[in-house]
Length: 146
View (cartoon, rainbow, N blue to C red):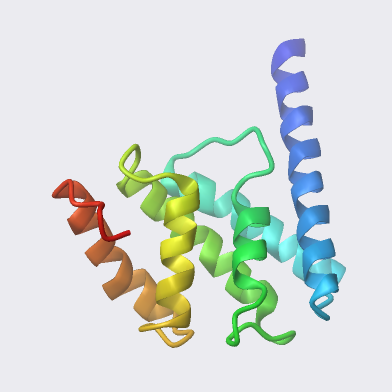
């Protein structure tokens, strides 16, 4: 029981570190998020993991997603927390769908390229057309275009 409690505490500490990294990156780009928005992002992270059947013990994907997307012309102070929450859900869902076929870094780079390009900042397009195309190509073992 003590070991399980220790693992849970470590995971919570890592999540706090990840949120701190995100807040710093956002602040450096002129975006601040409230305590309520931070709580919503953390709740979205937990839900995304649960929905995708994944478990994490490190900082998670949020710091990498934040660093990749903070410079997007489609990220604003008003939509930042919601968009980061949705991007986490997208990342973990497709990470599970394409597990082992693509690295986290390549998946995030693909998401960013599609979001800023063909999706035009539309998370629905990214979740649908772009990501379905990615998984289909990866499952066909063609990852040369990523």
